[in-house]
Length: 79
Image (cartoon, rainbow, N blue to C red; front, side, top):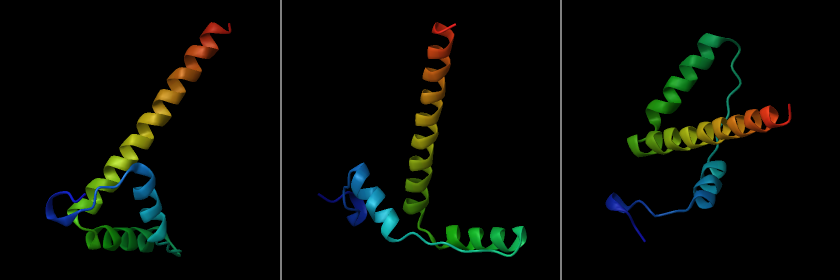
């Protein structure tokens, strides 16, 4: 199945595998170089790729926050 503009519909596992397959790394000698590389990297990404990355990060943050809340509630019950 294709979404608008020819974007294939993928599940979370497929998107994660696709991201891992094209993962890129860089070792900077200082913060300025790291910042410049990061900016150049994100400017090369399409708007769809940037949005997809943002959504994935947001989902990860939500999972962490839910886990913390669950742990805090369990700790309170254990008092």
